Length: 487
Ligand SMILES: [Zn+2]
Image (cartoon, rainbow, N blue to C red; front, top):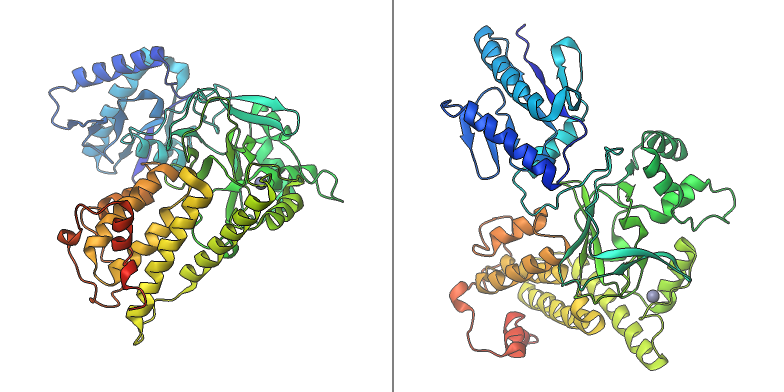
């Protein structure tokens, strides 16, 4: 049997994003380019150089993204010799700049292994072209945690809450405040006892990261019989498997995978949060974005529970799961305003459920039904803006309206809504999220994806149908077909 095998070298520890490391990496890249300048197999792109041999290995222009250079070395004698020669030359140049100790050579055939997992390497290669990904600066002791330097906030101790993240600069809406890898994650499918799983995850972490976990708060300290590891995990873990939790919060499936983050897990709760947490399954980073402009000195907050519920329900859940009585701005409103807020949040929850649970029916009254869907989206968006102001998360509701328009071939409205969904997703998840990328493609060509089940062509329009010169509210009424409701 012909056997292909892999060989290569890993950079251990990886380079940082410091100026010094950048200079060193640039010299190395220039040297490689110079060496292979006459070689037709060398391709230079915007973000990396690539060799058209083996499985097309790449060297990124940003050295901190680099983990591994490897080549498939085929069973064909000539190919093996050629590929092996590329590897030897590049490894030789790398050694000049980074030293023998930092380059961990390995070869499948000889049974030696690289330092990084295949998944880590895969991610790193994906990141070569992601210019907006914040450079992960790695502590030399840690290979699992990469945290962006936090210029946006400082961690202080508040007498009532313990640790808190306080903005130390004005943060514009949509800013990526944090982006980090989980210290470790646990899967619901993990066959091991959960405490054993946490213990073994901790064991594989460097000391500072273990300390990080052990000093997190534990809301279940006084609960009978709950192991401190488990209590701490339950209190601080966040979903690590999907981009976004959409729709009706009561019906969201529990995440399969949850994880602990070194910094994100320190964010305190508010029922009017100024940031939003999301997990990017592609980069496997957790992110925190500013939902609105945040002034200097304000605490950064996220929500621990579905916030579209009356205060009594929110406080019940928070006390049950996190052992505190929420005293955020929304919970401390004067009675009259609290009543209005409770009513709005309850209505938001009802509308969300009704939008989400309505199947796309193809009945005689389909038209009326579709119009009602759109009307509900209009009301929901208004309520969200009234309750949360600039920090309202609107991607889901615009997405629902977009789907309704696409189902009826209303491409004029769909184009406008796709842009709104995209802009909201960039604020909530970041430009590099898959959902944002997909939606960006839909803006110029809403029908392009073909993934919509047409219900009717009754609303058929094109982008020319978008009216000009309407003022804000008039335009909203056109967009959501408000005048046509009840027709
Ligand atoms: Zn609250």
